[in-house]
Image (cartoon, rainbow, N blue to C red; front, side, top):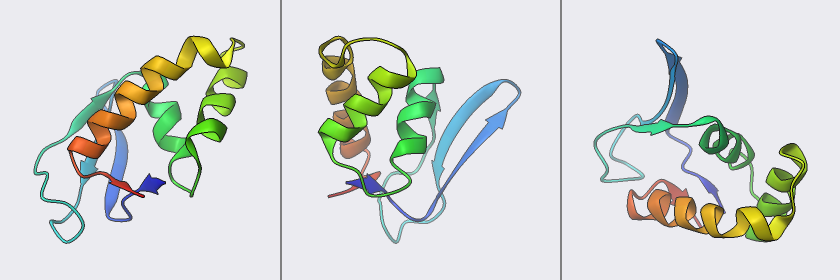
Length: 88
């Protein structure tokens, strides 16, 4: 999976936002405000990556066990998918 191609991720006044640029790949018209972890996940999703590799990378970045981040990652991926921001 990966993020749609047509998006930007920017820091605006201390808030990192993820914004689709057109409705060609998604019908979501808005922006998603990301926390630090969400930003890390989105950075990893710029290239094709599977769920397990994403969880392992995040666990390594935050020096924690994969089981501790898996539930939160799954919830965030579900939100991105609901906004049509993911390509499977």
